[in-house]
Length: 255
Image (tube, rainbow, N blue to C red; front, side, top):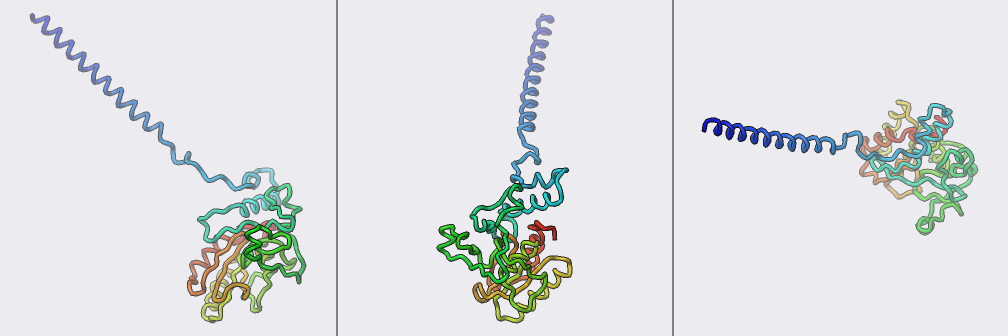
């Protein structure tokens, strides 16, 4: 009787051990499955690198190739987190945007049109029909890219209005252009002070009066970027954030 009872106790103990081992295995595999199924932070989907960035980082690339690759990446980057609205690059007279190194040195997207040639702002009909190349016109007001004057506007506050074609050339040189159409001298003085601060920090900035846009309006532009708003909503932060983000962001000539 005693040996039978002992065997029964031993059998029960073994069953308990087996059950515990089984539960442990289930828990272990469940935990390891959860761990391995989680994606590490650096494996999350990434925003595709802008076109040209690989060339810009290639060890054998020349300085000119790097500048061109970075410029191509900038004109194609429609990142909405930047403080501005993206305006697609002007395709020039041939209607084709150059977005490859193979055509970068020989395209008309940024061609000079002559010092006294006026490039008009496109009409709504031209924009709707995508007819901005023949005849040539700027699809945004003020313009943000495209063929322009061979003379760039100087990086400074301009006392006399700068022609928009000269301002576009300044943007090709990496500048931010601050345009204003307001009669409020206090607003103009604030803008002038902020722009002079940024110029003192080595930023490439042009400030000019521009009556070609709506009255009591301020606009900030860089190549393919525009922020336009009522003068009554002007703030120092808005202006300086734009300059900080877009100063020399597009800079194909290395200014």
